[in-house]
Length: 426
Ligand code: ADP
Ligand code: MG
Ligand code: ZN
Image (tube, rainbow, N blue to C red; front, side, top):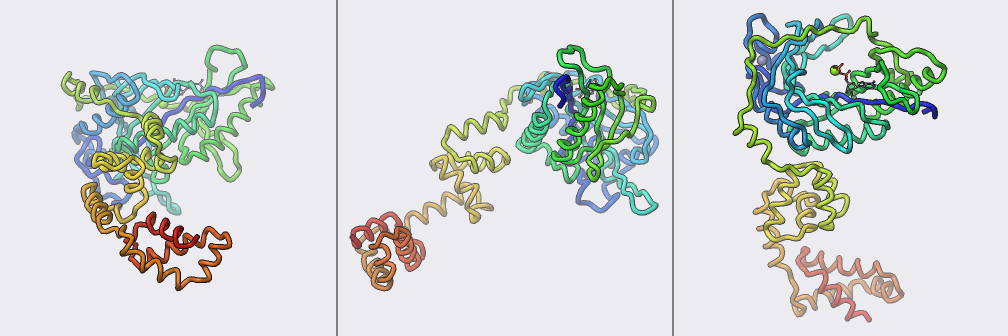
């Protein structure tokens, strides 16, 4: 960045929620794996007169997320029609709740949220040759949108923020947030101002369709250079939507302000105002949810290594399994080892793991008089290794222990074998 200006950056993050059914109809929410146009009905195909019915589970997921991040849940949610035309939106409007959203405020890593709302996804356009085909499986999938304040001052900070949001929704189990599958989509708004300028620039450049973190970083770095350069030489910067060409590494104008949409929002007449009563509200707000960052600190304090922490924080169900194993009396690192590393335990429940562990432990051979003949046989059969050991090769000892383990099918107590060998081979 040139030294005389600073960056202003705000994000809009969209994530498909992992509900059974879609946002306003009973169709299966499975946009990625189903055959095209199999999860469809008059509502999500936008046929005239079809009646939308809000998915309360989707609203709850959005509220759980919002509450975990300290956002204020709203008692009234109002769905409105956002009118625009596009082939993937044949009914001519998208249902969303921009003015009376799910929640307002809240923050993460010092970045404030403006609002969190829940809308319906559009259908998917597939371009093949001269044709554009539309798959409606994605139409009407619940889409969570987080809008931040323009609080970011650093591109890497924004990328880390998105990764943390991804981690949180996965951890909460509400979205797969897979960028490659399009479960998670990012929009970045960026502008620059002179150092010391307090007010926000009177324009912003919107970058849409960012489909990977590295794409986001490259596109924003280019845009920052372009805008800083323009500001430095006194060129006027304008409000517009820009795309990023990965081949050229440059951004380009897609839509300027003059062509900007006027969405003519108005309340959806077929969906009454959704009022969240006290009981519902309490059900969500009284649950204290540990954020991944807090969980990370807690697990590190328990002495778990980085590999364990990474795995447990990234997968809430694995973490729950870890807790259940811990409850059975195993130490934190034993429990983490069982659920993270041991493939045999992957499909096993905590009580099954406990059973197997107990039987392994009880069948261990730790009786020295039973082990002695086996240890002696191994020594006699490996005289070359024994002399290596005597001349200072410490890995020779590991080999001998390994041979004893092998001839006992892994049942010998390795520690006892080690001390017997040490006594036997002075
Ligand atoms: P709306 O979508 O209602 O027009 P805004 O334009 O205020 O709302 O904000 C949309 C997004 O753009 C938000 O994420 C916000 O943080 C960001 N934003 C707003 N102003 C700027 C700016 N001058 N520079 C960069 N980002 C901005
Ligand atoms: Mg917007
Ligand atoms: Zn449907």
